[in-house]
Length: 333
Image 1 (tube, helix red, strand yellow):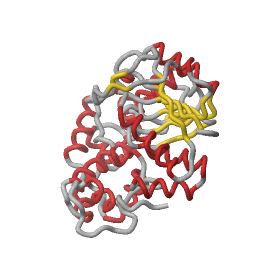
Image 2 (cartoon, helix red, strand yellow; image 1 turned 135 degrees about the horizontal axis):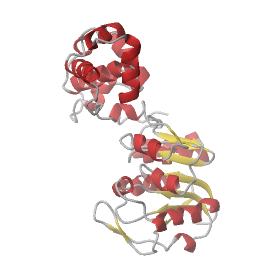
Image 3 (cartoon, one colour; image 1 turned 45 degrees about the horizontal axis):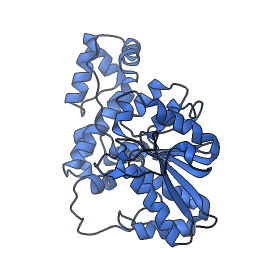
């Protein structure tokens, strides 16, 4: 393929198959509309790898065996956050980083980039479940936990799995413009830009029981009865401490403020109610937001979508009787 942009995928045993297949399909689809991407696959050892699905994937050699690349894509995998990362995998990224125009990670592949030192001082993201671990493990990285993908100085990181498809489409648009990218999006039945961020997909807040009895009582009450008055003064009175002391307890043990904690618990409760099919007004009342408008503002601010949009996306896999313009399955751009 004359004049092709070489895209090198760095793969390894246990890599998430969709982290490779999703972006690869976007680049392949772009070729049908006039782009020229040429894929290559490398592994730390140069041997075939076993993917997360059990499928064995042939490779073109090691990082040292491929010529300079236009784009290097580092795939993710579950083991990257549970075990030490293979030094040969880190070395492969260090070998390729100075030889590419654009370095990309999909999902937990960001941990490989971090281990290679290329994310130091940069903004980056990863799967919402592992964003806190990335921030703790590499405090010199400015982790953006809600972003679907982030670019900083030619280094691109994406959120979990399918967000890698979103990022690949953004790279196609960067290379060939919005018209070609829009054609790819329509062909693959995807959004040009997915509404909202990662928070709409995240699981409910998990908090270790606080050590302090007073704080533990407050946290238990908020979780059990989110619709009660949980203002700072009210919570402090229930705990038998001053509002200032309660704020110090929240900061020391939970790393947040009382107001932020209450809002998060109420948001999680509202998401669960909407998942179960409850109406917006009822959800607002039961979750403690007081009004549907307050609930809407919180959802848009924190999740990037309205309560009704959230319910439509996560309430059921059954098709809605009537699709709104721009709903999932109708790519926009």
